[in-house]
Image 1 (cartoon, one colour):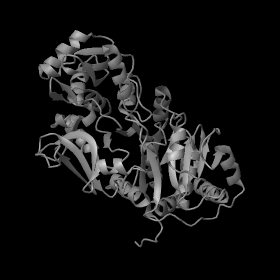
Image 2: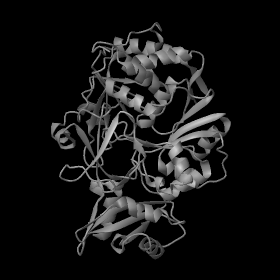
Image 3: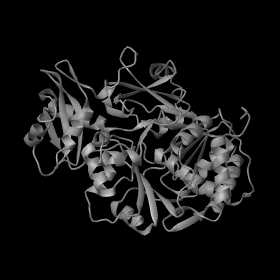
Length: 493
């Protein structure tokens, strides 16, 4: 493949859309769009965006919920070789992201006062596209062009832009799709997490296989269950907290749910065991980050092994994906032996080349060609990776390091605990203290502390426990530890 060849990530997707023709591609609120209709809308929209003045290399920000137009505009942007940034509506940092990304245009559901040269509404773009031809548009994108700039959640400061080239998106697509050549006829992908996040990529990849993507405005348990029950075969991606909500309501018939992927935040092994008992070996765990779109996977066969001979795999995120190298490094940068804890470092074509306009941060996390993720983990003798927390989540009590992950797992193994999150809180006597937030309506703090004491060393027992009706989450579905740390600090001040 020459440097001037069209980007495979885009050209192969366009070829797939054309091949599936009259199959249903997208379904939203009872309205279906075939593959041929989707491709025609992509070509029309690409021409409309060109008429608005957008050219290869320009930045485009799209702010919208889960709608078919989001698929169309993303495909059209990639076709033109634009630098695409998808955002969820209501983001407080939108003005900053719009400015930092250097976007030439922003498309949103309702216009606002933003520092962008061209602001368009979805309706304006859709109306303009209707007047354009649906004849094919050549792929302008090239492999080394920047395909998109995603922004981190900003839990440790302002959001950071993470650029990915079209070559990098192609590499992550091949890593996740390795070993998959076809999908069963009639398979339906239920998109309930935000399209602007990782499941949007998964949904786009499903279209490569001729799968129908049913789009939901969000996760409503009853609506989701109804969609599964009416589908001959279904697959989906859920955040662990949403999977817990399914487990807490055992009345649903989910027998047609053939594959349930989960990720974005750690899952409690005890809750995963419940999911395996409920769904069988139809589960797939994904481990990735904004900076590294493909790291590891715990596949269905691994879940089956966890049900039988290897229950310890319930705490694993799986093995590195094809084309991805993962090493664990000590503080001095050297590798750690098997079984010992180190920082997860990743290398591969799908890893970011650096933060957008942040050379100092780039130098801090990209060293010697390796991305230092900030995650802490250990490998077992068979090459399975186990995460124990993040470097910033280490709680130092009397000079001794405690990792949040094992404490959260111990709490979550209690039958009454639905979810648990552990953070550090300031303590005048010990420097920091372990503070736990739990969703557990039928127990008390002393019972939980006694439970943890039988499973971990005494120093790892939470000094204090706060009971919540629900754990707050970020837009990415992760427990909002920033908010919980603030609550823990206020409780101890």
